[in-house]
Length: 295
Image 1: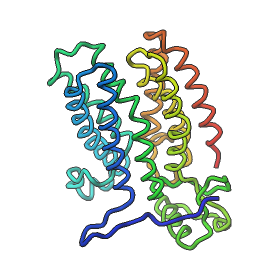
Image 2 (image 1 turned 120 degrees about the vertical axis):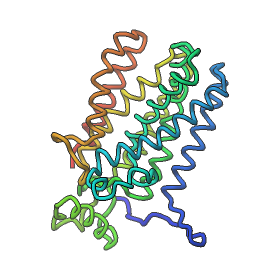
Image 3 (image 1 turned 60 degrees about the vertical axis):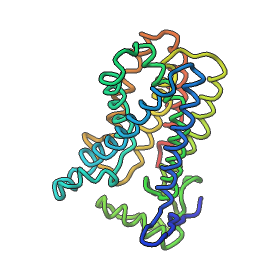
């Protein structure tokens, strides 16, 4: 198993800089920089793409916070209504995805009405091509913070619970969920779902996107491919979570993933050239989810 370590923190005067925050900042910088190159390569207007990226980044920040406090931590909002305005607290990656897409739709509806439907899809697809790599960098920040802990396990890639610090950390997670650690926990480890997602994005999704990029793909290909690859795996990983709120047995992220996955067959019918890629991606992703779905 992998050793447990504390998140690195750099103290600069009164300011504490955490490893997670650094990783998120690098992810945002990387995504905005590389997607500009992607716009130029596809002969899309880089200035329009830059404005779209800014809107989506802002929408992603707002969506990540609102989705988190409304669906994951509504009790916090009841106790502290001002939490809704502190956008730097309590964030959700799925909320960021939804917020970014909503911001893109609003941008095209209000600031770029003259852009035709195919071009709009091309801009979004360029962003979707870069997004998995940026998300992987952000997930590395989650690895540093261990902020997506799962159940105890003997899985080889789990984080070891042999140290007092690790036991204290996961014990707090279990207590918050109203559970008790198994007696043999000190000889086991815990699933680090941020680590698993980082590995999946880095070793599967990003290489596949790079390989597919060798040939011309229709606009919308990478949007659908990312959904087909990522959503089933994320759905499976969420089954291992300990303290996340659940609605009728599923986390908020699982509900969003399930609804989007349900729409993919309709997309495949409308875009026949994408059908083969969708089918293959769903089979591979589902197999990965099943392989990592046990405690």
